[in-house]
Image 1 (cartoon, helix red, strand yellow):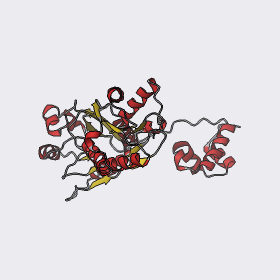
Image 2 (cartoon, helix red, strand yellow):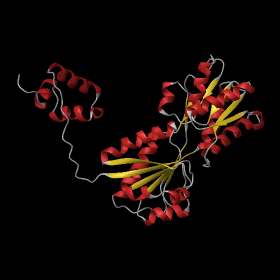
Image 3 (cartoon, helix red, strand yellow):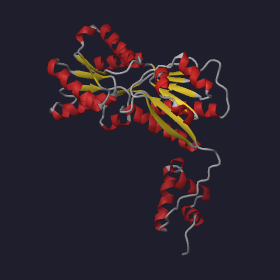
Image 4 (cartoon, one colour):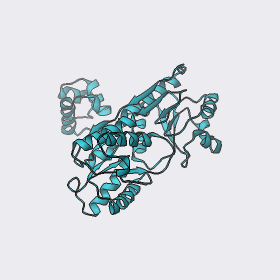
Amino acid sequence: MGRINLKDIARLAEVSITTVSRVINEPEQVNAVTRDRVYRVMRELDYQPGFPAVIRKDKPRILAMVTPVMDSEFISDLIVCLEKELHLHNIYLLLVHTDGADSLSLFLSRSNSWVGMADMAVIVTMEIDERAHAYLSERGLPFAAVHSRCRHTFSVMNNNYLGGYDAAAYLWSRGYRKPAVVRWNEGTVSFQDDRLAGFYRKMEELGVPREAIPEEESKLSIAGGEGATRRLLKDHPCDVLFYTSDTMAIGGIEYCHKQNIKIPEDLAVMGFDDIRMAGSLNLTTMKQFIPAKARAVADYLINRSGGHPPSEFPEEITITPVLVERQTT
């Protein structure tokens, strides 16, 4: 047989040429049975697809993602989800780290060269005041906010209070009566405080006062979670640890493994976020729908970049986390 082409594969697999092309370029768009049949024919014919020529007439654009946190697994997952939403529109991500500055105005006073490089921006976990909004608007830079409130632009928020409240209710329903909390110690944004306010409120309703719940804090990182867990367990007997982020919960799990503390037999562990690693570690957590947030932000900014003016009353989406029960509780 001469050179194999898509027509040969389509005929033997009993599908259209379009379906073969889609299996090669967009396999997730084809049902598994048809996809496997096409793959089987390709293997039988020893067909090796080449790389298709990619011709883009639209100019590449840049989305600046501005955040004070870079070592959080939540940020890593958000980056992955945003890139997935943006690449089909020839938009590339520019990461802008604020070196810990939580105020957008303060950061812009120190560093603003990125504004001239970007076509749009998403501001993550930062305070956005009138001055910052005016600065970006005067330069025609559309932006959205994630876990940051701004009455002038589209924002995506968590109902962190209800997330913490429901987390406490779940742990109580599982029979845990001696909870402790691990939180991070940097930043001025309020969403962590909201998680804890909901958690403590429910515990108080159940008869456990806040002062009876030990608390330890550290840097928002896996290492920070490990260190905080070590210090907490040294002085406080407890039957469950509630972490305000999955990143820190992973550090707690690592510490328990090193100390031969069985999870959940000796100590239960619960996180918050449902990052991708949470599933691999069977971590019980509160899911905050990171892909949906990335999709909402991308849709808004792509729409704005297409020439659509901002709404007179910008939309704010608030998503309530839901429990994902796994093997650590």
